[in-house]
Structures are given as structure tokens and as C-alpha cells.
Image (cartoon, rainbow, N blue to C red; front, side, top):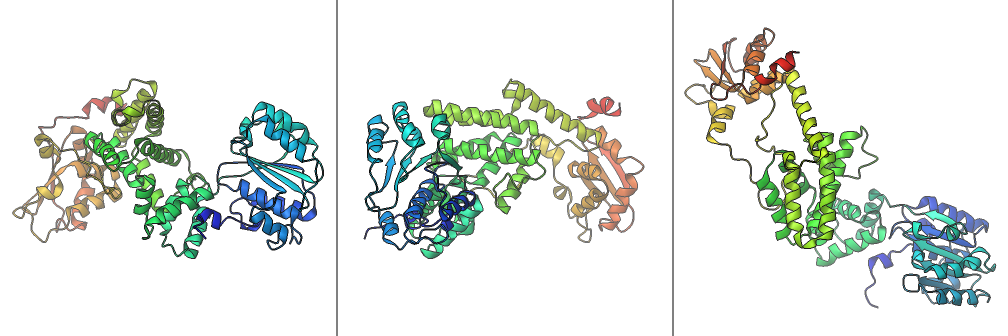
Length: 531
């Protein structure tokens, strides 16, 4: 016997075996048990969710010789004939291939005859929305009042294309997309039986890519298992041509910090690895959608189907943008997908220009862009009012998640003046000015930040020096920061934290200096804040 596809091998043979459609199978099972079956059913829903499978199970249930609580026994001659597709009284047709009125007229002629072997003649018409108008008209009268020995089961993925006259003559059931956790559990069960080494995270990725369809998920798992080795997340991404959430998070950070080199590097990685930019932008839209949900919803658990690791990555990335920026970006991504569909020959150009517009709102003059820019200014003013230092846009991209296994994202190289102005605290300390017994300067800043977060942020940007283990010199870049540190309630905090953190043995003398090279970058807001 030749190889049988896994989705066919593990197709449910009873209502209890159907996953994720309890609201449908429980009703069908009860109707079958009580003998209150309808003459026509309409199964609607996305592909791969069990419509045709439930139709075949129902056909077995109404014809089973020894049914068990509404379920087919699976052992009688009727069940075996239907399973082996040799039962002439169960007719399965594909409306996509038989759209004409002549085929429906043949059915009308057949229904007048009693079944040859089974109790009922069952017609399963898949993708029924593909029938022509003439075919629907020919079917209407038979569908409304068929003989007692005939049952129709219609299945469709596009119910809106069906005439209302057809829908009204059927008992309708809506098949839902199957949740990711249910699909993942089913994949793990099949993998165990088939001796396939399936990583749980890989099962989650496959389930998510299946978009709620169990058949598609099983097919994707079989595809990933083709090489014979363990199915891990990396193998799934390679087999399915997806980039993964890490790359989306890297793009989000590059957009936030206007890292054009990082954006070009990400696009080049997708192209060089034979990925489809349309698929990649589909992933970006999903990532931005998840970030938007996290920003607008207090309880995102019912909306986002993410693993704990993915949820952490999305949450960290969502804090980089204002809600207005996220909505603006979503619009740009949507337009890019549409443009790639219309002009696939310039996908790379569209992708690069779109990401550049996302990273620099000044490149776009739309109302959404202006709204995003205003929202950013409002956030900066709030920080200034709270006494916090506003970070420069050229600030180095923070490492929040692991990078993807592609080319390194190039980071901003500061100029000589920027290096002088924002040189790190560890570089300012030398062995001549600080003894080995002095505590960690980072701990000193942390102690202050625990009591006053705004002062802690200012000190992170400042340059600190120690003279003779008795004097602490703090050099800041603007007059606003200088005035904040000189406040009567802040200076004692600095001296106390210097001793607690081990930076000094006794409260030091503190001197606040203003870096003459930087000028006063924030004084222009002073009047506004004071008012």
C-alpha cells in the first residue's frame, strides 16, 4: 500500500474525534441519536476546519446499522462502505468542478429513486457557492422538499456568495477557526504516534501558520518532517519560508531609532534567504497588530495567541511607540502589501521605502504622520514636566531580544563630539582617579533611581568623576538637568546614595558642572514647563 497523507490517515471517524467544533458536533450527535435529522444542512467556515469530515460522519451516522448514542459504529457494512468510498448512495461532488445546471438536473432525476443499499441517499456538495445561478435555481425546489430518503449536506468557505433562498432552506452550522493550543496538542499527539520528534515551540508556530485549520496544520507538520530530523522552530521557519518574531522585533527597534542600515540589512536578509517580501510584510503586519492590541487593551490574553516568550518580546517592543505611531505604521504596512500585489516586480523597493517612512515621520506628509509626530512631542513634554531627560533619537538601539540568525544590524556610530558628550560612566573612571575599593558607579545610580527616577535618568546621561576620593563632580549637558540636581531635596539624596553604594566612605562634596560644548538643549521649553 502506498503512502497515505497524515491528514487522511488521522481524519476523524466519529463526532467525538473532531477537534475544536464541539458546538457543531454536540448538536449533530444529539439529532442523530434522537432521529430528528434535517433534510438539508449547510456547513460554513474556513478551510480545513472539519466541514467535509463532519458531513461524512453524519452520512455514516444516519445509515449506521448499529449506532451508539448518535455515533456511527464504524464496523457495520454501511460504515465500512462509506469509509472505503464504495457506497453508491453517498455522493460527494465538488461544485467548483461541476458548476453547470445539467449536473443538478441529474441529481433531481436521481432523488426519485430509493437508495440501493443504505437507508438514505446523501449528497455532499463541497464549495457549493461555486454553482451557477441556473444551478441554484434548479436545486431550490428539491432542496426545499426532498424525498424522505434523501439528505443534502452543503459545505462552503464563502457563505456570503450563497443566495438567501438556499440558506433559508438549510439548517446552518458555523465552523470556527480551531484555537492554536488545540491544534498544537493534536500535532503533538500525531507526532508521538508517528515517532516524529516535534518541539513544542515548533508545534505552536505550525499551528499559528495554519490559521485555524487542522488539515493545513497536519500538512505543514508533515512537510517539516520530510528531512527526518527534529522539527524545531528554526526548521519550521526554513521549511515554511517565514522569518520569525525576532526579526520583526529587530525591525521595530530599527524603526524606533531610525536605524536605516538595520532596516536595509533586514530586507537583504529576507531576500538573500529566498524569502518572499510579501510574506515578511504579512508577518510585520501581524507583529504591529499584536503591539497595537497590547497598547490599547488591558487584558490581551483573549486576543493574542502567543507563547510566553513571544508575548514578552511583543510587550517590550510595544513600549517603543505611541498608539498614534502604531496606527500610522499599520497604515503604511497595509499600503505596502497592496502595492506589492499590484507591482510584484518592485517588491524590494516598496519594502525599503515603506520602512524608511516608518522610521522617519518627516518623510511622509499625511495627516496620520502629522498626528504621530504630535503624539511624540506630547510624550517628550510630559517627560520634561516630570523632570526626566529626553533621550536623543541617535541613541544606540537597546538589546531587548535575541537577534535573528542573519546579518548583524549596524548600529549608529556616534560622532567625535557625541562620544565626548555622552561617553559612558565606566570609561570616565580610570585606575588613577578611582581606587579598586570603590563601589560600582552603576549601583550608585540605581540607588538614586529607586528614590527618584527622574534624577536617575539624568545621571545616566551625565559624566561622573571622583577627585581624591572626597569629591564627586557631575557634568551634565543642559541647564535643566543642572537645576534639577542642585535642588535642596536632591543633593542630600546624591550624597547619601554615594555612601550607601560604597562609592565613598563618607558624604562627599558634590559639584555640578554644565558641559559648555553641548549648550542648553532644553532651556527652550523652560518657560512652557514653568507655566
